[in-house]
Image 1 (cartoon, each protein chain N blue to C red):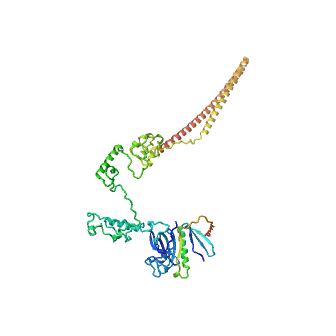
Image 2: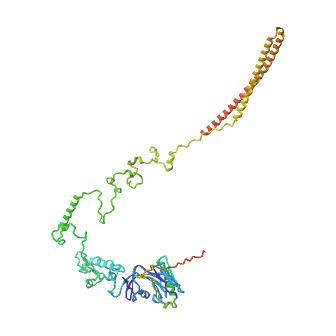
Length: 84
Length: 455
């Protein structure tokens, strides 16, 4: 069961997928990250068996006192679309 | 300093945007409040939707949170927001927590009791503050929409009866007050001092009734109680006169600048010629910013560019193209080139030289023949003279034969000479005719060309 995404450092979103693989997505701005998280959160809500009795989903996009990530190891995958 | 998390009963000031879920996707934005903030009590029982009140718990001031509210915690089966939210619709809400007011006075918090925890600093309370002050002055306040119905408790409440001449009708209606109190606050409550009200010492502000600086010395008694306006005015006038005597008025003195010295006055920006520095020839160039006067004046007579028109030209300034027409010379006529004559002069010269050489050779041959004959005859005469007298007959015959030969050859030669002379004359006439032809041709050509040029 994939967990809820987490927004880190305003413009990063980290997700665990169904194989427990961690994905860290970097967005151009925090607004884009928040917009992406909205869609994910809504999809999570729609996955509920009974939408009327679904729980309230919350996701913190910015927590003021939370420490920031300073150093991190990252792996970037660049995928190119096939030429049309 | 750790920020406090929102707990139940706290009042949160939030900015938010709200979307609906439609067809399994994020739908339209149905509501938002981003300029000012709305107040929501955490886990309270207020006008806000339940999901919003529940979802705020645990947030910190300055934080941002996304909520997906199921319809049971939102508008439910009824829908809402003037039917912008259909029934049974989930909401997606984006919240910015901008202001926090804790429910119980947690005085042992790390935060000091700043005015942000009270009503004072919010915009609406400032509005109320202003309105209550207006009511005390006596004017009729304009009731603005959205103004809260309570005056803040932190206002310094000082009730002074206004003079009778100020708004008699209002004074008659409510004696002791300038106008009716629009907020309907009992005077008992108004007179209670606020715990956050700080009594500041009175400040002297110039221009608002405070004595001028020169008045303190003029007044003999205490500083303010014995303030005599007439004496103060006299002292001020004396001070001004002293200042005028000390600094005579300068016609381009800098104006008074209350906020510190302004930019240094540049002499190049001045219109006064007395302010101009002595002219420096190093800057005698066009395009130099130091030329604040027109560059083509009498100071620069030698640098003046040539005029674009002849000043004596009565036509005035020509248009741009004609201006250059004047400086160009008139177009030169094409030179008359007479081509070489078609007569082949080399052949003519050859013919004449051949003729002359023929005549010379024939003349030379005839003269040599005549000389030979004369020499032979003389030799015959000499031989006969050497003969005896008896041979006189033979000599005479010989002489006669020689004479006859001589005459005959002479006649032949003369005939031949006549023929040669006639031939020479013919050649000369042909040569002359050829020359005449050549001359005629040249003259005719020039005439034709002259006629075409004049035409």
